[in-house]
Length: 237
Ligand code: BTN
Image (cartoon, rainbow, N blue to C red):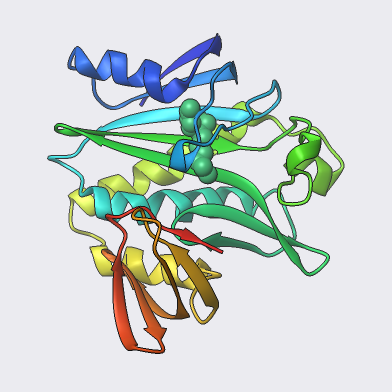
């Protein structure tokens, strides 16, 4: 995939969208910092120098967004495994977490936007950036874990190698969607947990996560088994 490398931008997702509107597909926008990095739920994503911030644009007629959404965090974990000797996992739907001192902290996040016939997949990973005080309790960087500076462009190119290899295999039907789901579930730290899910209508459902599939989570609640589709925004606490 072509990589467009910028020194700064408001948000790589927004910039990628501008190019995608003109018909461009299969490319990456990478920026050394973002002045208005966006997280899920309209939150900010602190994007200070040293972190890895990039967005990919894929044609959603060729790749199924539901499968890609599971595949991206898998590939991030598979790359980061080579840098970190601590347990890594995916918190539903796609937060990249690392276990330090018996506590999971967030190393990275993914913001996927589905527009017309394409998807913009924005990925932020705390590599060498200093974690701001307001999120120190919940977030951590690779540098903090390993004690060394890590080459963020190397992480990106390793990610793309793994990701594009999976895309090729999916396209050639050498691997099917269920194998991706199986891997996702292997890395999930949400299955089996008691969670509180905040729905987009502000309703909160509480229960135990029995399963996760392409469409969302299967939750055991006091009222019985409920399927919570990921189509509506979900925030697991
Ligand atoms: C989240 O966990 O809330 C998702 C964070 C996604 C951040 C990335 S950084 C690159 C891309 N551009 C953005 O503005 N956001 C995503």
